[in-house]
Amino acid sequence: MSSSVSPARCALPNTPLADAAAGLDACVHCGFCLQACPTYVNLEDENDSPRGRLVLMRRMLDGDIALDDPDVGRHMDRCLGCRACETACPSGVPYGELLEATRATMAPVRATIANPLGVHGLLGNANEWVADCWNDNYDSAPGTQEARLTGADCGLRVMRGQGWTAIAAGTRAAFRLKMTATDRRFTFGFRVVREFDAD
Image: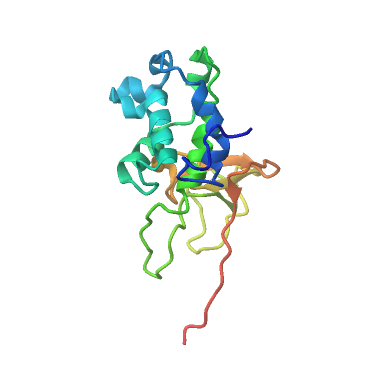
């Protein structure tokens, strides 16, 4: 999809959001998306509606709002990505594509808190495949950090955390999903671990 944002006006050239920007022009701000959006229905904040988020996206492209603005990040994080607004939209705004492009554009610059080892960004950006077989609870789980390779259903594996398209509430290590080992999605990943000698 080609962008309708001219390079002279675009504050974010060569980003996923700039590449998807033509979709912003389809929005006529009719408001049909509002009642289809669960975050807007619950929070009643225009910035937590598809229409409001599209305005925020445009303002980032125009350079009026910084990518690391915490308020914008909060509104983008609150979106469930359910795309119910797309079925309500008479103009065919590709909201899901725009949301994914926005999150991908924001991800490299959003502030993260370092863990005790000084490492940033271990939660989010990718769902983490782990070797554990799926079990509904932690009964009989090993008391070590070894993978749990027995249990209710080893045809299903554990996915921890959430990818960059998810809301912030899911980006924690305790968040678990059960997935078949053959599932593949662009937000799936794994962690590479390197062990260091104690001395």
